[in-house]
Image (cartoon, rainbow, N blue to C red; front, side):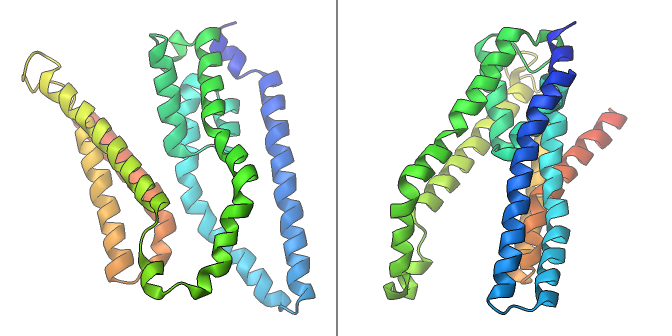
Length: 253
């Protein structure tokens, strides 16, 4: 039995499924307690039910992006592990990047035929260690950080409108990541067949362009047309648009 077959075996499903089930149980407990707390403070039962229905409806489409991440990683890491990562604490943009980086450091790729016990253990360990810090840092510093919000009423509206360091850092990080990936795609297209041959694979560039234009359209609708409800759908639909473009181009190449 290959390593990839082991990653899709029943014991792995049981371990990962048990963890996901435990987290789901905690979520259900909090939902029930929040519902009861709402009734206790005088909120109408019908209004609470509408909130629950709206949350369910507006959670389905955004979660499709997470499902795409599970599908993308399941071809190399099996189904249970990506399912666990993206169901509990993982992030779509984080998991795929770290998995690819870890595999590349071992001279491999996220390919089932190249998946060995060493590659998977390294990938799984790095994916876990890199993201566990958000839990540790939250447990240590969230209490002092949240105290700052108590003084929010004394802060002027002008100061509130300014972006903080966290917003700037996150924006800078994503711009850097996008630039690095786009630059690598351009490099592959320009020089894959020799210096400045322009014979490489240009499909990634089309996918990036279509996804970016789709996201720009959603951003324009949100800001200019005041369609704020589209925010939760923009990432998933942009991914679908890029993937659809890749499939269509692949059919006619």
